[in-house]
Length: 360
Image 1 (cartoon, one colour):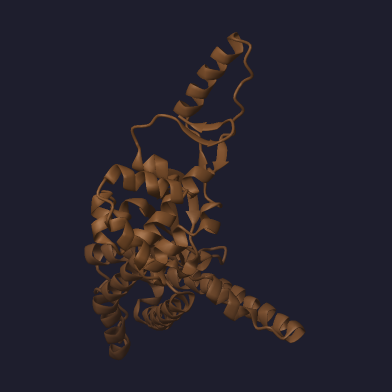
Image 2 (spheres, rainbow, N blue to C red; image 1 turned 180 degrees about the horizontal axis):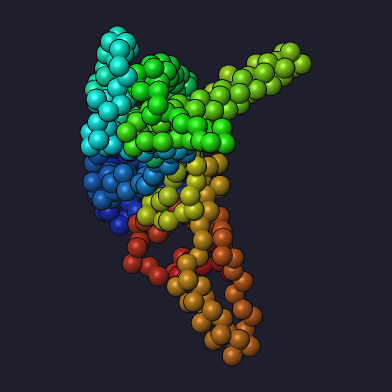
């Protein structure tokens, strides 16, 4: 090859050099392989190799994880309830002379006050972080591994369960701190009535919220336990612990989509997963590999179809058979194996590819 290029260097006429290369080779790739290391020939022919290996791609991220969506909805709903509790707490307060039981347990009240003054705002902050993180996992362009998602959910669930335990204790203590007569009253028919609810709004709120969260968490845990049980049964029957596959499949997938090839728009083509780890030379080899280029497709746009229809109307009026065309096509051979005449002699208007096949 070095010998061939050294002989070509002796040809002074650029025009003759181009004709000689057109006579010897049919496509530009063969010529580029011959002269890509010869700067003198590249300059003489005014060829920039990069112009023949251009592509545009985009990165598409597919998000997975139904459980993350479920947790987001749960966190938002709980946040709204605790936010309402916080606003009411700072507006109305809790214990006072009208509702605090005489001879109350000081340790219980200290624990309840600590939960209201410090843990309440901290938990709202935790819910805010949890909501933000779930939104990032669902909506961001960051790819999260399935195992990372599971670890995040486990850590946040442990914090949430710990808070619920302390919140239940707080509700239990509050019950023994408010005046008994404010909690219930019995009418003449022996039926219990709730009275003075505004004075002990916090107790009613705590009790309702504790029961609601307990029921909801119980339902979630039952679903989780049932799912584990089903996977365990599947493991016993098939000796394949599918839960690990489930976690792996919940990983986000980052896909590289090829959209343009040498300034030709093509239909979205998904590149292999290993594409991201290749160097630029390997990427070009993969994209411009002949076998792969034969897989690329393009669609005719409305403007192109309109031009063909106009030509067909003229042909019809002159009793000439219409052009047959397809909206979706594979890349033609003269694009995959780009004709050298089209590169070296761009001022020509007609190229004969074969008998009865021309490019105009």
